[in-house]
Image 1 (tube, helix red, strand yellow):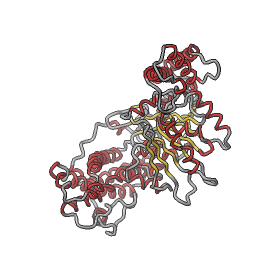
Image 2 (cartoon, rainbow, N blue to C red):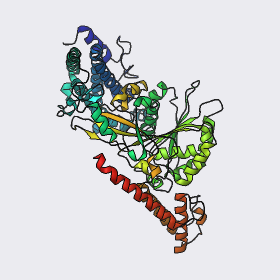
Image 3 (tube, rainbow, N blue to C red):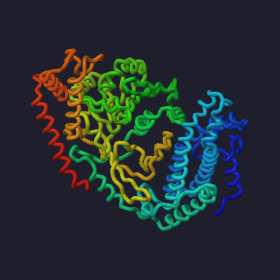
Image 4 (spheres, rainbow, N blue to C red):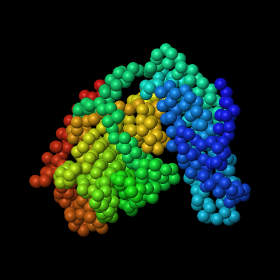
Amino acid sequence: MPLTPSEREHIAALMTRDKEAGAQPRFTGAWFLHNADGDFEGVAGELRRWRAAKPFLEKAPRLVGTYGAKLQTAINNGETDDVRAILIEASAYLRKLHEELTAIRDRSDADEYAELFSLQASMKEVRSADPVLLRALVRDTETLVRQAVREVEQMARFAWWQDLPQRAAAQAPLAEVTDEYLASLSEEFVARAEEIGAELSRRAAAGETAGRPLRAAADLDRLAAGRAPADVGATPCDRGSLEWTHASYEWLAHCFAYEPARSDTNHVLLRNGYSSKTLNIEHPSGANFVVVMPHEGQMLPPLFVFRGTQPEDLRDVYTDVQLQIGDLHFRALERLGLGAMLRAACPAGRPRAVLTGHSLGGALAQLATAAWPEFVGECVTFQSPGLMRLHHRRGCANLETVSPSPRVTHYVADADIVHRAGARHLPGETIAVTGLRVDVEDELQWGLGHTDLLLVDHAMRDNLVDLQLAAIWRPHRKHWFFELAEHPTARGSGHELGRSLLAIGVELGRFALDGPRPTPEPLSWLDDGGARPPGSVLHAARHLASRALDQQTRPSLVRALVELSSEGARAAVRSAMRFPRRR
C-alpha cells in the first residue's frame, strides 16, 4: 500500500526546517535543525550552516536508536498501526540526515576548506563550526544511517521476535544501502510496514507466539549457564531485578567519561534530572574524573565518574601495572582534594554521592569509596580490577564505620580478564554477564569482553529509551545475568600473579635506577640519594611483596612468592577444569 496524501503531507512537514510547519515528531521528540533560519550564502553563511548541522548530527545516534527500539517493541506487541507510523516518521528523519550529510560532504574537499578558512571568516566562527569534529560526525553518521536501514530490513524479516533470535537473523547479508535507495526511503519503508503487518496478522491468526527461533529459550539458557563462573557460585538473576539506573551509570562510565564534550550528552543529563554544567577535572598525572550535579531542587545523588585507561596514554599504562592499580592517579587526586570535593557535594540532608567507573576508573571509584565512605551512597563498577590486600583490608574497616555502608555493585564480563586483576574487590554484589551476538553474517557468537557494554542488549530497549540512552542499544545481542556468591578475585588469579610480579619488577627497576623522587611514592622511604646496592634492591623487593599481600608482621619475600605462586596455580587449575565445559 503506497503512501496516502496525508502521510505525504506529514513527511513534507517533517522535512522542513521550520518547527512551526505543522507536523511534530511523535516518537522521539523534536529533531529539527537548530538555528537554521537566515542567510546561508557565502563563507560566513556556510559556517552558520555548519553550526546548525553539528548538533543535528550529534543527536543522530540517540534518535536512530529510539526509532529502532520503538519499532521492535511495536513488532513484539503486534501494533501494526504503530509499525507503519514509526517507519514513516523514521524514513523522513533518515532522509533529512542523508540530505544534510550530502550537503556537507559536497563542501568537504580541500579547496572548499581553504575557502572557509580564508581571512573573510572570523576565527570565532571557525571555532564554533569546528570543522574537524563535523567531518568526523559526517563519516560516523553516514555509517549510522546505512546501518539503521539494514537493521530495519532485518526487523522486517523478523530477525527477533519476543526477544528470541530467529532464523532470519542468520540470512545472507543484505544488499548495500545506496544513495538511490535512501532517496526513495519513504516508499521502501512503507513496503516493509505492509510486510510486517501481514506477517503479524498471519501469526496472530495461527496462534504463533515465537516464530522459528535459532534455538529454543531453554537451550539458550543452558548454553549461557555453561559460561557462568560456577566456581564462585553463580545464580541466574532476572534482568528485572537489576537497578534500572545502573544502565545510566554504565553510559557515564563507559561513554561519557571518555568523551564528555559531545553536545547531545547535555540532553541526556537534563532529561535525567542532572545539570549539563559538569566539572571535568584532568590532573597532570593523567587522572581524570567528571562531577555531575543534580539540578537545583532535585533530590538526586551527585555523580563522580572516573575515566578508565586511555591506551595511548603511557601514564595510564604505568598506573595499570602498579601493585595497586591506579595508585599513581589516586594519590594525585587525593592531593588535589577529592575528599573535600566529595564533602562539598554531599551536604547534610542531601543524598550521598554515587561513584562509578569502567576498568581503571572502577578501581579509582573503589579506592575513593574505601577512603571516604561517609560521603558515598553507592559504588558501581564495570569490568574493573580490584584492590591490593592492604587497601582492601583498610577499606573494609572504613566501610564498617559508616551506617548505612555504601552499596557496592560490580559488573563483570565472561570473556574479560581485567576484573581478575587486583587481589580483592570491595565487598558487595557481583553480577557476571554473558552475551549472545546475532548478526546477519554470524549465526551465534558468545561472550562479552572488556569493551562491551553489559546493560544494553535487545531486551533492555524500553529501559534505555526511558533513560534517553537508545544510542547505546545493541539490537543484535541477548544477555544473561548471574549473581556471584563472591567475586572471582577472592579465589586468586593467575592473571594477577603475573601482573603482580610485573609490578614488582617495574618498581624494583625504578628503585635501582632512579635518583631521589621529588614526590612521595611507595618506596620513597627507602631512597638513599645514590646508587642502589643489590642488598638494598632485595630489601625493597621484600617490602614490595609484603605490601602486595598485606603481611603486617615479619615481611618475608620467600613467603610472599610461595603464596602468590600457589594462588596462581590454583587459579590455573580451576580455569583448565572449566575450559572443556565452556566449549
